[in-house]
Image (cartoon, rainbow, N blue to C red; front, side, top):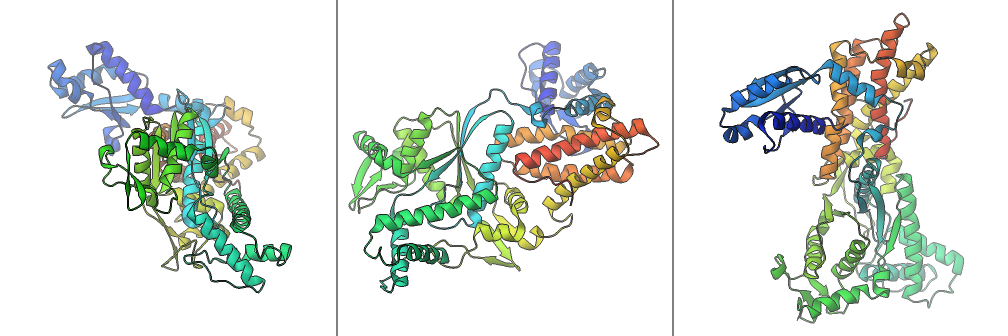
Length: 545
């Protein structure tokens, strides 16, 4: 039930009937001032020239045509040429009755056509435990994938396993050095090596299992040990957030199959590469880039761009309608370069959408905490989850749009008050669950509620019904923008609107059975929205708090 879309289609039908088939697109907006209606359209301003009629006169004509429409209690024309639409109480009640049916909530919001969608996210190198920044990536990607699946798209959640390249060699050499230290054969620690405690812990595990038998083992042994141990840690952390994947794609497979070399060979054949100081670069300027990105270092090692291009060619070959890459702000230039190289090779880039998220600052006692996977001073995502819990962490990670810097306030995250948005929303659901327990104790069954007519008294009930039916408008915006933040703040507003309603009415009144059932039907829809949206986004909806 995408209400604004329904209104748009209905109004477009009416203006075509009134003025003919060839008309400007009808746009429906939400006025900031409730006095200007629940919805409005500026169609008269757009159509007045073609109709050779003043905008206000055209608005009055349309308003007159809509005066008897069952959806509206009032329709008015406003200068210079707007039509203000006020939804009727009967139409609001009909909408609530529809959502109150004993059906999955998101069954009312299925999209057509359903697309094949791939969302690739997290994809952290197995060089250390997940950081707070990785947590934002995980929650952005997972919650979006869950939402897209809920509205009917065919989803693949994918993790690109970066297990090749210089960082893996550095990781292996760091682990080897720690292991040799533990068995009494210290060596010089590699420059820029990984010095976190987790490296020592893995080295200690190897010593306990192998004693000194691996003193002469090469890089491949230590890389495999580090990769397996760290990826196990990563998956354990993601399990705590209830983040799952359908596909784990191994970067190393792109080298083994020759896909990386094939990309480089094709670029050379097409004349889009050149050598510079022993390295191989891509001719960026003819393809809209401000610089010529290096593809192969002078050491002969490919940069990230080559395997990333090969990886996207693989995904395009799997025939997805939409390919979403969730990437940190430090990858924005690289993503542009990958798209440019794909275009140069003749591959379509239209299906590829990048969600570039800004960095997270974790604030503890008013001071930012530094994070690094190479130095010993960093906060892991696990530590954050220990402190605030998965629900709070996910809500806060999603509480700002991806392109906005996120300051994660630990003090606010741990408050159990309406200042904390996740607590406030979850408390609304818990309060509703309590109301329905009271209803059961008073002999009011789910079947009774289903058969009742919704009660939209007093005025606060009408305000609540309008907020309920605006869910589809918020959802549609989130789907178009590939952002879930607006849905969370909608839930915050819905909870606030419900609490105002709750202070004005006695939902379960033993002396008013019909009214109680009608009020419970309205409250049941609020509860359904809170539960369905929270759980779809991966956040709990507790019945008691």
